[in-house]
Length: 201
Image (cartoon, rainbow, N blue to C red; front, side, top):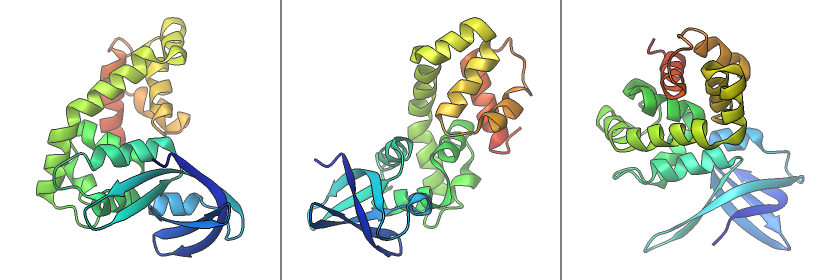
């Protein structure tokens, strides 16, 4: 229903903000990461949104990037992970770190978020690992710039580009990918690099 909001930031209260658009103030729940990206009160702001409809309430959630929004949707698709837990996870970790934790099976990283115990972290990884692996494969094989990098510079360059799409800096990606044999497939390089950056290798 709501794809995005562009307007004046008029209030910030904890992890919620109010944005005025055409004279109407919209309250949005946001992550700490999104809050860190917002301008000062009174300035123009743009955020992507997700409307969460429950029997007793309708809540609007705002995210500074599509990556964060998509990660939120992915997390809340897991049984037992509601909007509150999704916000808590993305207030503690970046979307890229969440992807890395799921890809590498790092429960400990996910449990850094308030309200996420070991059992819930294991469930998140169990339910999302295949989806994340499939998404990484699509990023590396279907994105034209990545395909071009693979053809011209080899698998390492394509893996670095894919990690950049996930939110890592090129320096971080280069350092992680360079630890592994370029003869590995792009998917294997991405998986190993994510595991390495999550502290698993």
